[in-house]
Image (cartoon, rainbow, N blue to C red; front, side):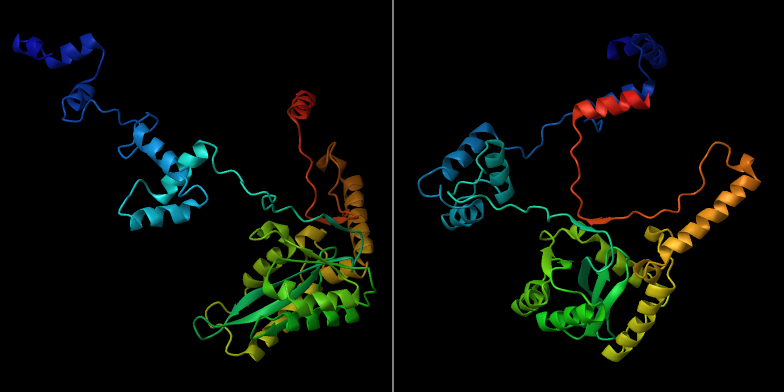
Length: 344
């Protein structure tokens, strides 16, 4: 290139001959111009461990002195000896790549089995409950709202607000809810997460006395208790929820909850219930309401059939059963192929 330019050739003509742009040539002439800077390009990290360093990590972790210790203890002990081989995460990465992070004890490895599916075909068969924070005027101080919901009707069957989270408050609330709803022994499954109030001795003893079967979510898995989580979002996104003013005292919080629960149970048209209220669903009034809506739609279709063409009217039927933590069927590759062929 330089020789051609010294001979009097124009730079753009040289680029045309080579099939590149002038911009590409200028980029190549920069000090780091030959480095591939594309995002998809494969680069060797500057801090990548060498093969010798990897072997030293494996040798150290498998040595008689450290082979029975976790990496979290090996790294500090090496530092006490004045040695640094790699970071804790690098130790774990190397051992994981070498398949040396398997469970080594004679006991079984800890598992987090999904809770058993609970099916409700009517009210007062499966309840879900949880506790959420209500902000106070004092930063870092909260009031605690205990809420019990029927997953079949989405009705709030009981609630209370306290200044602390205790199993005693929870047990008293569940007992009162069972009395109010006239729940008999071995009739109800009560689902919750793994919090201390949920698994406290006082709470579990109360459930045993009432004949209520407890059910618990997996640790740190909010999806196992979706109905309560959804309710809390509705609660905290309600226009009247005091996000700025907050609650001055526990009595203010209880007063607000009275109005919210009354609105939620008797006025809120729940989208999961085909827009009937939880109380209407709980009391069995939803069947008549939804049947009347279907009649109105059928009459409208008969009057103006062209507006529906070959389509059905809106489906106003509710499911007969509601399932908490359903067992999802694993679809095989063969089943997926069959579905694609049927769709085509």
